[in-house]
Length: 254
Length: 219
Ligand SMILES: Nc1ncnc2c1ncn2[C@@H]1O[C@H](COP(=O)(O)OP(=O)(O)OP(=O)(O)O)[C@@H](O)[C@H]1O
Ligand SMILES: [Mg+2]
Image 1 (cartoon, chains in turn purple, blue):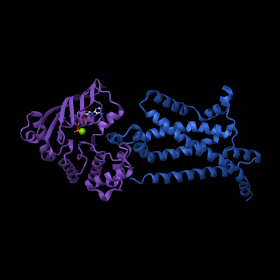
Image 2: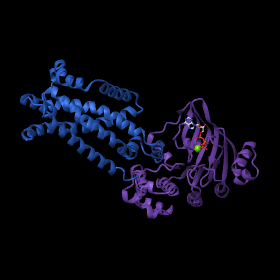
Image 3: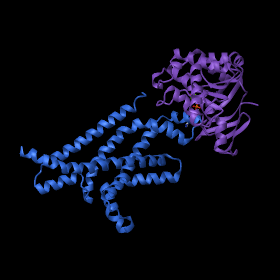
Image 4: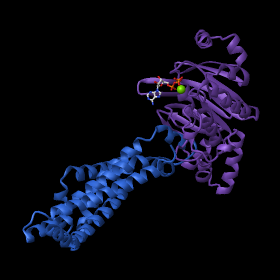
């Protein structure tokens, strides 16, 4: 059973069709990297999975549970708010711009949702939070506010914050694009560690090194469509589609 | 010298007036902020009915003169229905100023809430927080710091607007000053009265600066 499956997922912003019949299936423990030019719909695809965007057509299953079956934006699946929240909580998300809560310390950022959403008692939430903060290597920063951290440190806190909800799937939307080059490595290392532990991951990234090393599959998106879905070896050595070739050339030469 | 002695002799009545002015300002703006929070949340909510009611309320109270609202509540409501008579003048003024200040606070709170980066809402949603948890735990606390300067300004505006209560014969500083000036046939009561206003304004400013610093610890 796939952890995530989409069928003919389509989305438009007004007259602009941003996603066109996207089909994707992600197995448990798989790391899928999505690449493609700016405006291809990569973020929109990721954001549709966890309902930050509402799709117009198509189906989404998470762990075999049908979450969306939309026709003209109306969901044919009637789930209660609790049921859909429970499914959505299986997915954690990391954003390009971190989006940490600036008025909360590192520890508070990580504990907030476990306490208020999972309803964990504070001591349990704190134990989980501290273990995750240690995992991302920031134990000495637990009481700092995000503004006192570097971009790389903020992104690692954001990863810990998402993991604290104990999701089964992690979605990353260009997690290193807002970082200075020298800080990219520390974030990728945390992601590699997660992948090695068997986390199911869907990552939009321009880090081709990461894709080659860690991805099980690479998806190439272009103009709202999934044009290619193959192993890194296939995509990087023998891309089938001419658009993929052009794209890879442009970023490898950049 | 005599003038200074005379001014000092006016102080007790001026201070009694100041008590009314200060307490009316403090309680009305405070109640107005609570009212304004609900109006702001209503105005940004997706519920069309709530949205219209709150927008209409804000439009009405910002679009008509405060003086007229005060007259209407104190003198006209009892004519419409004697059950709406408010005998206590302070209470009538409190109601008028709260209703009015609530409309202004609502706009201040709404724009502070809407100025918070959209990424904050998305992060909260991705963590499974409900709309009300997102507002309560993430958005509203972050808007505090942006609210403090304009709300401080609102206090100072209302402090001076409160002088309108003389029309319902409530003895605030302005009313006391006017009476002193006419009974003594002297222009000078206005000087200590204005100094009292300036002192109160300075205290408000001081407190709000302190508050702003307190809520800025995290950046
Ligand atoms: N909220 C929105 N309203 C209108 N159009 C939008 C909105 N969000 C995205 N779009 C448009 O949808 C298209 C796809 O955007 P998306 O952000 O998914 O692309 P992307 O592949 O993530 O690009 P990038 O690499 O620049 O992040 C773009 O043309 C974009 O302008
Ligand atoms: Mg994007």
